[in-house]
Image 1 (cartoon, one colour):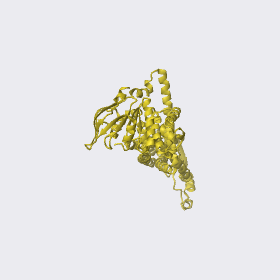
Image 2: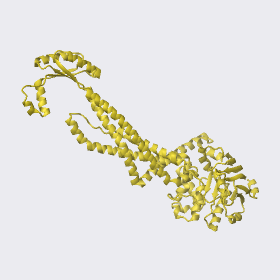
Image 3: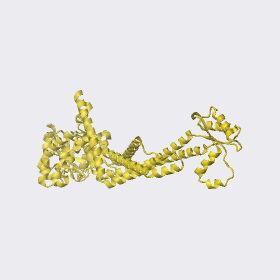
Length: 228
Length: 336
């Protein structure tokens, strides 16, 4: 699903964010991406999301080489990647329903289908009864779940999460992680950037560790990758 | 993922029938989306009525001014065209001529091929008319004799009512015995034409400048709207919104600004016409002119609205091009 081949990313100021990173994530795999602040986690996610382009090496997502993809094709790639943010990036000028509906509207899904699929996504995260509320009225954990519903509403084959539990207490964090596990069980590739070591250890999943832009560990559980 | 993206494009569907129904529903949802965006952006404008009204008024004034001047110009040109087609020559006869000799001359001129109609105004009749219209009747009483000559009013046929034809006729009439002077009053008409032409150029320059001003005003208003909806634009781009998708609401907003501005301009024009019509009628009456300030026709009004909407769209396009494409999502959270 995701493949990094000798990927480096240098910013203008001689600061190298990523150095020759190699790894491969299979379909349905759930992996963590960890490392200190500034180790390159954000840059790595940005490369997958096409917010940045690599300075060297190849990023392949879903069989598509992203390096040479023209700018106008970028939106069509992003439609296959669900993203969950630490600050959830919800819009407070519209209801929970309308927030979750955005990826579908962008794709031009007919109105009838939108209703059905938004409710399915909200049901999945247990917020079906809050669809008419403004996200502002929800708790932090609920807001994060709305963000997850929005990320999965168009059933993307790839789900990225950037510190999804950063602001949540351990119990809520475990809930959220459980959701991610469910998605990976139905074939979604999930990559979670986090520095919550306790949580990562508790999950016992493959972990990619970045240190000053280098991938120092790409996880021992390679057999799960080969299994698919 | 490559297969996924292929599947989402209807023209590459597997069966022809399926592809047809897919593309139909895709078109339907495309138009439904346009309707939704159009009504959404209209509602947004109505939600801030004062701010929207300000923009509409600015646009309305900027549009009403050149259109009003163009209407005035059209009316002026109509007047001068009317006068030109009724071009007549005035032949003043020599003082010593009797009325009978004048009638003889009238017959002679009237039989010419290049004359449509000849009217004789005898000196007595001329004096009476002058007395009535000039208001100098008391002064005229002091005169011992009638100072006015007999006059022939010569109308050339329509085919000869060109400057050259009229001038040739004037020269030939002047050569006739008994004709003292021939007056062709085309000079002032040409001057009027020259002035309206200059005025027309001026109005078009003004119209273009004000049109550019409208585009800039709308552009600036849309720029503010873009800033206000920055978060929404970022999220739309993150979840795969194309540039066209992100631009659409702002382009519709520009069109609505244009429509409102066009309507305001139309109302302003109608109001000023109504307010000016009385005095203009009186003034035209004093000049014995059929001058009439004509308002916008239905097609004209429609054209005004259309031009206003295009200007609004153009302004939005400028803003969108400059500011929207610059908003690109980054990952603002804490992951290093």
